[in-house]
Image (cartoon, helix red, strand yellow):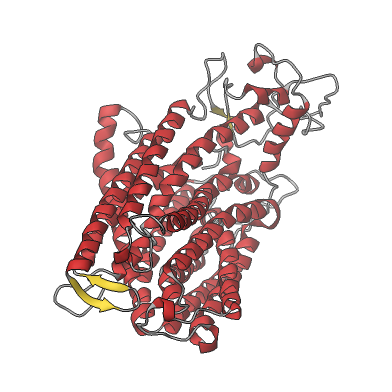
Length: 588
């Protein structure tokens, strides 16, 4: 993100000054964002139910497929960010990805609208007696999902930064515009989630899957239309090369010079050329990973240009670049510790749907049933209610006590969220045990397709969903802020992708964990923990297993947090503390 901002801010005589339109382009940007979120969220939020009811997949198969789909979608954002920053720019990446996403939704809609593209309906028959999808039907389904992966891989890492590109970061009005755009961005996200988890999910579950998937596809078409209609107004920042290249250069140079002896005073003797228009913070020397400092040792073979930079950056790097690479390496263990945390979130997006399907979803004495996929809205409500309370009430009081910005550190906020996730899984196990017991002793009806419906109200799922929402308000938001502040300024778009990549790996890990549990508990005395009929399984044991893994992961996180050195905190070397190379030209 910041790499491209540099291009927008630091123009030369050979580059035309960019014409920022600000709010004139916002109706098209915000409209594109809103319709895109309505389309993608409306399609994906109920996809698990679609696969099990229309494509007649077993719950294990559908859950694994959803985990792979979500994982691949999130992992694709890293590739999308790289291609955008290096080759295509955000405008072209967003345009191509939006069209791909629309085509994917259109294909998925056709699988519901055309009877030959999905298996025959088997009503309330036992899932074992239902006809599964043919290879051609699966191929058509996978084409739709694949196009949606391509779309999300380009849209997610670029849309927020593209909107911010429309404002001049060097003016007060531009700075206020960027902040206001961020607020609108998260508002549209919440709005889209609310509509998708209520209206669209209701149409899909109780009216028609063809209409329920066709509406999001039409929303995505409107998103594409809004995006291209504003083309003449947009600031289209050209790609300026990938900052990942300098990272690789440090490793290559350090390997080439691995036999050299490290200097005793590296802050004085290492090569440290800093480009004139560098937007990255000047970093003090740190003692960690000193082997990388060999990349900045000058030898007689190294040649320097007139501006002070190395002729061959693959042999000679700078101390500044070495310290930036150290920052990236220090972030990795913190990022890795969040992956197991995400597994708890994934369960509240997948297996909680199956819990809801076998719970009493009626509202009061009415015949209206809350769609199973709509229960996820309580997680969002928990997050949206908690954020203003925390930000406006708790943070000011914590700041007075701790004298720290934000009241507590970013890593402490992440730790609180991880603890809440552990309690979420324990509570989920307790509620599931109660749901199962009532389903076996006092069912309210028999659903041949899956199993007996428990007399426990589906509203009992609200505590675990609300708690995971509180957890996200701490850990996920803190993680996004952590990457933004700790990554070098010219790599913040890559840093923004790390959250999605973490989700991707957690989806794969969750799918692997479910498959292993399903495989190894089949012959256990307790029986299969995760069968089609949850009443015959022990989903509560699985939740306790995830809680135990979360506890072990929390211990690993504490060790990483204790070892972690925040960007800009040196090791006592007699240097100037972290500062901006060109403060007057620093981006927002």
